[in-house]
Amino acid sequence: MSLRQRWTQWQTSRFLHNHPLDNDEWHSALATLPWLSSLDAVQRAHLRMNVLRFMEQKQFSAAGDFSLDRQKVLLIALLASLLWPHEEGDIFPGWVEVIVYPGDFSATHTQAGDAGVMDEKVAAMAGESWLRGPVILSWDTLWQQSQQSSSPHQLVFHEFAHKLDGMNGAANGMPPLPRSLRQQEWTQVMTGAYERLNHVLDQGQKPWIDPYAATAPAEFFAVLCEVFFRQPQQLAKAEPGVFSLLCRWFANSPGIGLIPEPLRQHSEHA
Ligand SMILES: [Zn+2]
Image 1: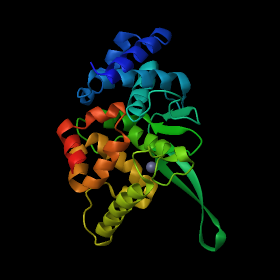
Image 2 (image 1 turned 120 degrees about the vertical axis):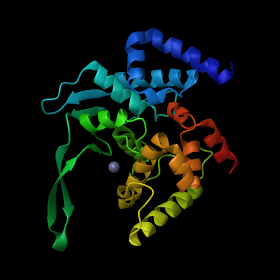
Image 3 (image 1 turned 90 degrees about the vertical axis):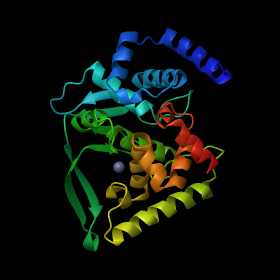
């Protein structure tokens, strides 16, 4: 057993001692997402610790006539926690509320229109993430996507990728970078891929990723995170540089276990 494995195991047992999460409850939550079966023991232990932290630090509220029970809360916490790369400190810090609607909800957005007039747009939304405010989710959408064995979409990944992105104060498609990643490298790789996608769309061709990714760098990052965890092969094939960058950014997240090992190794040596 490696030092990291022993350390994680010690931390987990200490944490679980103080914050019990019933074994049956934990295993039945994992069983709702069969595509998590590739996670190893260390990644599962880290995930469980993240989930406990998440449930302790975030507040859930139901909107409309939705009935939000502990199983549903646990599933949302589980999905979000796959992305969190740290083992200590607060999880997704700086805000607390997760609001869950039964299905799509309507949101009014005000934006500057022609001649300085503010336009009010009402749109049907499946999710929203405020820079320093709540995450809002449609249960229908996140549940359906979670039950598909292979889908490029996962709403919870998308909205929590926005939270990672906003941790350095701006939703601009660049989360705070670890020391091993230089800002210049990140910007160069991401800008190149973003421009290629926009070029493909300008030519009227079919893009390899949901075209919504081309609407802004922040959306590009959020949609990329969905594809990275749910269809890593597609991302590695279409944009190997982006794939390798995300492998490095998410290296210490439990969700990295969703990326097949040979694919990860190949990207390290590319
Ligand atoms: Zn978004």
